[in-house]
Length: 379
Ligand code: AMP
Image (cartoon, rainbow, N blue to C red):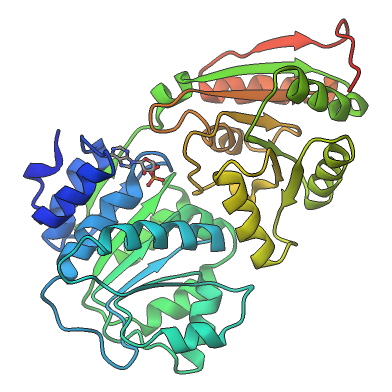
């Protein structure tokens, strides 16, 4: 279905064409008309389903012709769990806002960077994309007022609740006016999300987009049974022999991410690590370099599993398997996005074998497991 019948202004339809968005994704087809009618929406959809545009486009449209926000009273608040997601959502808002006859002023705020520039930039902001902690700091300093919010978006709500933001979110909800539109997006409908849904949404349109099995089918998955101490040399061999570029490697901890990146670099393979212990500046810069193909290997913790969209990412390596099968699906979902194929490689130690069977069962797909015992690993 094309975007032309969804009620969006011509300027946005043109911008969509320029972005090569020819057909609306299922979530967009359902969410856009409902949000334009100011209905509450609960979207159960994964990253990769097109959920960001499904709210960005109608939210921007609804702000057209309205009063300009005055004195730091913002109109739309988008709450997100991570700094990276804040910047990514901001980019989508910016990209479409610039196409409008009345561009909407958008701003992303998150912790880990100085608060003063964010305070200064808040004047006349209409759409604020924020992580909960920094938003409360700004509110405490009177740099932003939430009493005129017309629309609240919770993106990756399950992640926010799992990451222990519930207290901060409750403080924020108490500052919002009662009459407003609520849009809640979550990859799963967990008990936490269900509780929030009861409180926040009035007669919502519920849109459930099944996990994109077809997008998992786009991913070539392969697993190697391997001893722990052979993982490093084997990773280097795989990268070198197959001349892999843009490889996202997941490890189980920040410490391991640093160690893996260090070893790769020491062996002449350009690599760096990213995780919550790195400064925000370094995280943003690493991701930017990686996204633009200027960094060969990015070694990350699960910080990057949810919400981050990297276009045409060809390779994901599960150097360590994640504990939760859902996280495995999210990790490999970094590849095979938007109809482009990808390859996901998993390292499975003897201890992991049972867990890997559980992951495959949950995913509904078997993955070929190759024994590396007979492979001459030179590193
Ligand atoms: P999201 O689920 O919001 O993270 O979006 C996933 C990816 O799909 C992003 O790279 C978008 O640019 C892309 N995308 C979203 N909607 C469309 C569409 N209708 N047509 C083509 N690409 C899209």
